Image 1 (spheres, rainbow, N blue to C red):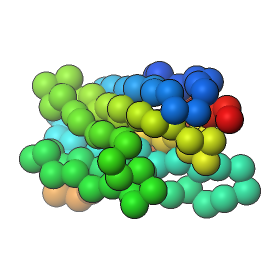
Image 2 (cartoon, one colour):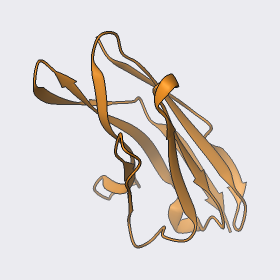
Image 3 (cartoon, one colour):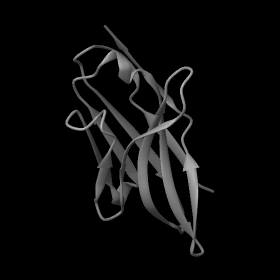
Image 4 (cartoon, one colour):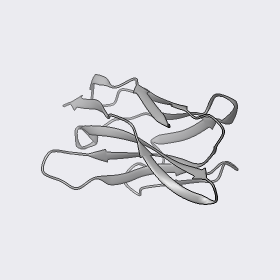
Length: 119
């Protein structure tokens, strides 16, 4: 079974920074892409950033230049460094991992961590 445990959310003033972490417990399988999504009240869940096992990254336009995604493959952990935060970044942030199990890919999600940016 795959479990994702997130940490690092909280309340911060606009212009501030937060760092999210997500540790995946995986035994016997490899993790392909890891990423972060967010969902604000009344809105659909949206991609924030993802990173492949080889280190290729992709960002939503709204966070480019402010957020940085990274991962430690040895620890099965993905990070999201969020700088210059804006009130519109307020949302529940979810970690996602695509796990290769017997040549099929499966999506797993964390429980979500709240990020609130005050103006």
